[in-house]
Image 1 (cartoon, helix red, strand yellow):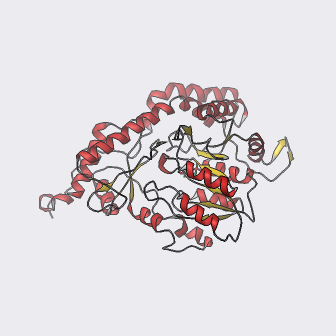
Image 2 (cartoon, rainbow, N blue to C red; image 1 turned 60 degrees about the vertical axis):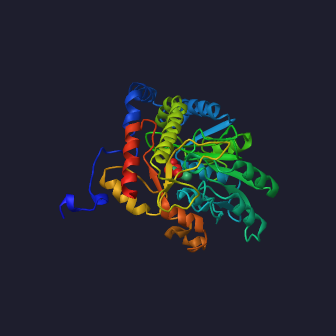
Length: 396
Ligand SMILES: Cc1ncc(COP(=O)(O)O)c(C=O)c1O
């Protein structure tokens, strides 16, 4: 069928390509600073831990307003370290969300504990505190020792409620803050809300390394000491192993790169907030924004909760025709992504948890409806107009 005979909606109209993420735009203005920092590591040969890592840890702790920051090899290892250092293992259970990246659950299993899941709040996609409370009030086959909420897409889980629930039930709170560097809850930064928090510096994150890297933060000095020991094969003294830890060390090169980027991350988060506000305005102006959490003819926009400072790691809309919309955008060379297409309780590898389809309807609906649109600090207004115009064409 010639293009002109195709229904208007299906005609391929490439206005301009819009990438989901373009890290080259971040690199260009930082190139000299980053190369100098990397060169210093090569000159001094401080490849693993040492002063470059300690320097980054001090700056990160100050930035987040926490007492201790422990650099490690990835966000996944940070989660495992936080759980293991808290003394959680076989015979314990941890409650978390079915709607997150795989590591939120796999780290619990790797620590030898049981993962108990409960559904999400459809307005924020974050773990529902009500659901957690029901689990804690119910009969527990294995005692729950911690709650592990994920600050999904860059917005803190409801920490007013989680602190109350944690206190009332005497369980620890571990933040999965992998996506939430700089996010706040009632003026307090993610990383200092719970007993411990895990961050990821995976290259797509708001604060990112040039490879894998992560961090655990805490205000508990004993926990910090244990975390440092566990990240280095359980050694306090060289070649004397007190416990079976792991190699979860941070490289000097990554720490040096992160130290440079740390100085810019506040500005980047500010820019992300501007980008999010612009999307909101453009969708409203186009008459596409729907209220509530159930999309029909338009799209449901992401929601920033009062008292929270969202850092927009992702800008995630809901659509009733998500897969068709994504294909339509791809034809126009507009990037988008689905975080996450399969909720964790339905993952092949997690069948062992014993859940089945229908157990967590909100997580399952989110997995069918969510679509993350391009967002990064350098995204231009005309590119956002292109994205919203394409969605308007699709929905017309
Ligand atoms: C919510 C969440 N938790 C944990 C992780 C794991 O981090 P990493 O990829 O650095 O191991 C990620 C990273 O993608 C994440 O998004």
